[in-house]
Image (cartoon, rainbow, N blue to C red; front, top):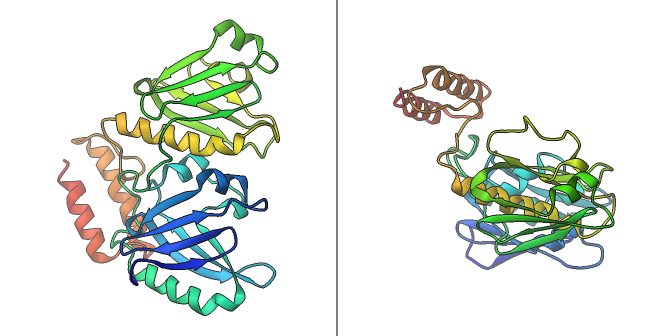
Length: 290
């Protein structure tokens, strides 16, 4: 990459190129998506990226897009593909007259990708938003101290009778296994905490589940709910004993699980997404678990 300090200014964001990362700084203007304003700034290590592309945009623009690796960014994991194109924090929209400069940075970033960029990351490589966080939902306020506990306090105007009967809720991070986030851009958006052990005895509807807060379309500061979910996910991951690197991963000494991971790796290899060297090295690593 070029020397530290080089920047590429686009619409709603500026990318600063460092020797080992891209620092994305989002504008806070009235036309900037609220999610970007909540994120403010993100540092994306090169090892967290899977690919970099440049394509024509709308109305005389081009779009530089850095695709994150699967499992590298808790924000994108929490979003689970629900973000609209205009709210994708990995897209930089530029005037068409900057296409040549954008091509240069595309090539520079592409050359800096990790050798295993096509493989899912074995853990989060992008930091989640830090520090205490909170947001106001339709039926309550969600707060996270940044390390150990999530608290839901119900609103007397919006909470269901089931939530009032249950009372305000406190969830130690060590007792959670995940977070479900459904975009506030839809009518039934919510944030739901998943306890270790699953959903067996939980209400199906989030408005009746004391482990959920519901958003209400266009209500409150719910654009802050996704960074909130990402921070909680990162804290959960930090308290978990191990995170699998590939879908279907299993504990060591599980032959069926290892075979499934090798099969998945073979599919990536056949598709040309993994080189011969990467395939051989990772296969040997998986076989060593047996």
